[in-house]
Image (cartoon, rainbow, N blue to C red):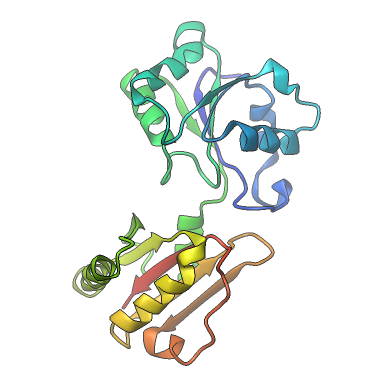
Length: 236
């Protein structure tokens, strides 16, 4: 097995692994003993779903999240850098290093000229653009918008300006329990002809992906996605 930092995607929810991850990923994962993970418990659960026979006690986990002291994350690559052992990064959902702290480790690996290998897997960002009908040549992911309503409206109008002035699709996310409030703010703040795509629960049983203008959404029953991870996309 090639010595490298492997970027290992996971399912976006309680989806069957074989539906979204190629069998090649399985073969790579079972050959790795050192994992950089956002949450150890969920990483262990994912690895057991990949291969029931995996001996979790034989594995070493390095936790990387908002509580991690970033001064020490370079040490997580020592098994690869010093001993030539493969190391894997596992995100909480989707692809590592995309809207994910794993990007900091990848940056260090690149600086040290270590081999980095991304594996194929689901990305809610890419899949939502695919399904929206919006511009896939130029798009931007903006993460979370401000929570305070005045600042949120200001941010939304700034993004709306970009879709008309730069022909660029704009994406952002929200904490699921605030999804309904986000939709309400969008519909009350943006132009009637601006298009909004709501992409929720991608690849999961509750998947919901619809594109309509703001004016059309105002006539529709808003989807009940208060507990479902969602991406919101804007375009002209």
